[in-house]
Image (cartoon, rainbow, N blue to C red; front, top):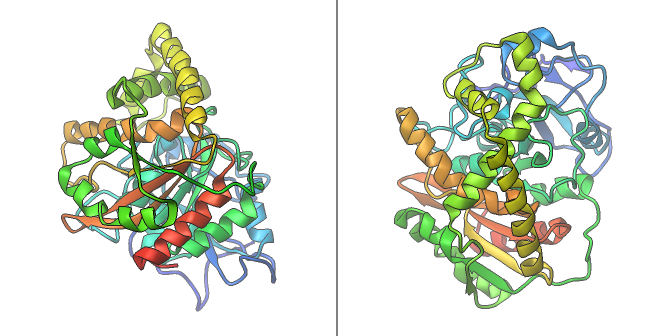
Length: 405
């Protein structure tokens, strides 16, 4: 390990990296990721460095890491060069990317808008070209949403596919490692290092299913910006078939997800919050207070719905079907958006991200369009255990659309 310095120093012009000394670590001289640089969200441990989890009180009450998270170690052993830790929303509980302690990263693709959270710094680092790829984590959309907002490729793998040992938790039965990349091939290349072999490696993906409620949930301008990508996708998988996956309505998915996740968030972090009495920035303390007060009956209903919904989705996708829909229903909110406006976007977004989140599905988002001058992503979703096949499909679609490969 070495502190940052020297002629090859990365200049962080967008505030993507954690302030202070730069956590750097050179990887193996050879390997599939040799020559590629990466960053890690500051909830992954790196031996000898603090893990701040985006909050000064967390950093104050926790020792520096004694060991490196296995997922990070795998990237180093594959030849990747770690160039730093990235900023995150406090305790990973937020979707805009705001952090009053470390500063909110600039969205390189739309500087007047939020970068998205909680993996805000990782998305911004990739979008700004500081690194080739960056690790984040995704509980309720924290890789997929910032990837859409910042115009990068991103993946939320099947739940449990990539180890989160040595990473701070929020909702363990939802928490998922994920990553961003500037090019589809790099996104897939990281998957070759981190992901297990697909459960059905010989299976061909298809048919293509267009999730009607997710398209209807998007702003008309966002749906229009992504519509041209569908013919290219149909060229790979055949004509899209309309399907409804949530006849209850996306707001019902959001509500059940919110309640089940909140119960886990308080079970995971409540004891520390009660003991340390941390100071939080806007919105974070309110979310944890709501988690503390979560009605056990509502949380139980959320868990029960999750079991039913997961069974429904896995049956639908078991033969190799792929869902397609807008990753986020709109471009990133503008920086001057009120807290009420931000909360409205959060609810509308998480109704869609809950599709994969509740069922543990793998989801890849591609920077397939722009709305009002800002990026919007297109999501491809498949059954658990088809991560590598989905990454390969995303790479083929990126080539068809003329996106960075």
